Amino acid sequence: MQRCLTLTFARHRRLLLRQTFATVHCQQSAAMSGLLINQPKYSWLKELGLSEDNPGVYNGSWGGSGEVITSYCPANNEPIARVTQATMAEYEETVQKTREAWKMWADIPAPKRGEIVRQIGDALRKKIKVLGSLVALEMGKIYVEGVGEVQEYVDVCDYAVGLSRMIGGPMLPSERPGHALIEQWNPVGLVGIITAFNFPVAVYGWNNAIALTCGNVCLWKGAPTTPLTSVAVSKIVAEVLEQNNLPGAICSMTCGGADIGTAMAKDERVDLVSFTGSTHVGKMVAMMVQDRFGRKLLELGGNNAIIVFEDADLNLVVPAAVFASVGTAGQRCTTTRRLMLHESLHDSVVERLAKAYKQVRIGDPWDPTTLYGPLHTKQAVDQYLAAIEQAKQQGGTVVCGGKVIDRPGNYVEPTIITGLAHDAPIVHTETFVPILYVLKFKTEEEAFAWNNEVQQGLSSSIFTKDMGRVFRWLGPKGSDCGIVNVNIPTSGAEIGGAFGGEKHTGGGRESGSDSWKQYMRRSTCTINYSKELPLAQGIKFE
Image 1 (cartoon, rainbow, N blue to C red):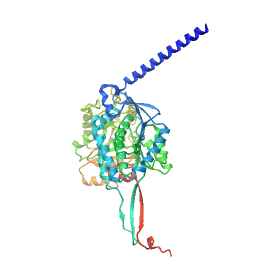
Image 2 (cartoon, rainbow, N blue to C red):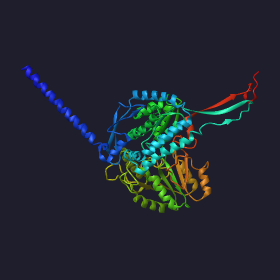
Image 3 (cartoon, rainbow, N blue to C red):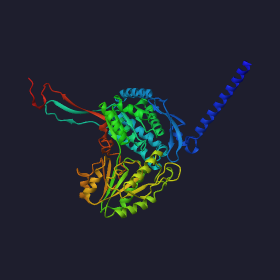
Image 4 (cartoon, one colour):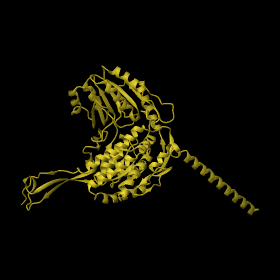
């Protein structure tokens, strides 16, 4: 009897195991088939080396054994593919390998490093359309903006190639006979790059191309909501390094969340932390880096304004304001959030803007006629609704938009709100959504003061034909922002100039001009090539 019961139980257990295995297998198959990457429409993702499950760590070899996250498409909230993030042990291993790789990279002459960066740019060119498509799929911006973002990385690579033959300091005249003063620039070492979701390719490119040319190695942590883009870009860069028999850890990557970001900020082996993101998180990063007397480069928020004077060309104003406030669904750090109109033309411009807003083509990011796509996450939709409610409570009137669009994905209407005070709390709050607050001003002094009264100081612009006003705007009593424009939008900066802002925007500078200095350390070297030992300032010590 006991033997029969035992056999019966054993058979039952085997049956349960088979059923359980079959159930799990079916669930896994269903999950895989539900991923966009497995649909014929998105087969192009595999051209970037992506699959259903992707390793989220690269340090010369691919790995990742941490939390598995799923990336979603903002246009329909469907899962694209999965990425396995880094554990802290894998972060530790990656830092060690990256620092070891620096020993080889720093010995390579700058023009030779520039040649590697040139090859990275060429490799990106070959994948520009498919990589731009991934940006549209995973971030949600329209396809032409996705391609344009990859083009920025390519352009910065081209810029860095020329820079590789120019970086360095001057030889200065010495007051002492037989002496020379040299300003020597050397790489800082390991640059930790933490990027945001809204520009998942370009911001890394700004930092990576310049940092590499200067002789640094890079460790990248992209946004947790755009991990596939981080993996795809790293694969392209890794292939170039491999083709040149260079350590892959020169450009390392660890996908992860706040744990990895915190580790980078606190890690004394990370010589420079370049952080792009919100002012709130940026402040925490800055304090952690400062606590160890480390270097930081901060690119944070912007509460950007366009000021329109009575002599402005309204045929420029309207398209500029629409592009700057609606482009990327209001998710650029340089998005126009405040539009200040002279009282004499306030009503007419608002009317023209509202008409233009209603003509903005909202739709699928891959449709070539689309000008406006979804917000990146469902949480952003909630923030949009909360901001509109606060604006109403503080005296604002919704002139255009203000509602969630009834369709799959995170779509909301681009919104114009009038009637608020210039210092209303919501006006002084950077909300990363497509809401434009229109303010009415009387004088130039008033408008300039309103521009500068917010905490951030990233981008600003005026529309006027008065050249005296233009130079007052550019001068010490004009805009206090890092980007100060005239007769163009607040967004759409070129790579040749230094990009960044003041105050709560962080003070960092990336991309062009002399921003390369942020990635290097400077030494003043005095060389005595005489047989005497004169002291500076004529001091005698005999």
